[in-house]
Length: 167
Image (tube, rainbow, N blue to C red):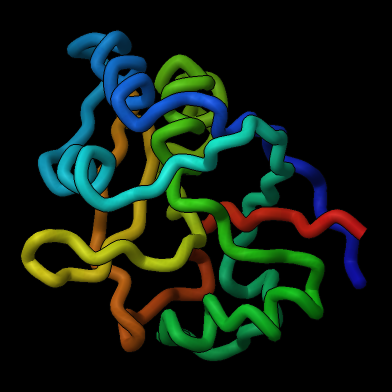
């Protein structure tokens, strides 16, 4: 199994969903969160009750062994495939917690202006869309929710954060 550098160690859990939302609101107007992401955060995600740290690796699709463009979500997020590589999907609160704890992620996001997705089980919103979070920085940090249904295409250069499974 290849060892990947840890991109970020993140604390999740231990706060209520309301506290998570308040923390994001406290970031201020310089930090953009789109309507879909706000809806997912306030209505659809689950916050882990007990605080814990998770290690995250930032990988391109090609780093996971894919060689053809347009890999589908169902293949990219396959739990058995990921486990063999030492990864798992991130808990639902990873995107908002990352954004909040990194003060909008300004320093880390500057290294990846085009952004990265959070590899997570897609969350169903009120419109029955399957969404995951994407974070980036184009002068100011942003977090959006984008569709990630089972046949969504992914390019080899797309970047995602995966949870590193402890051995």
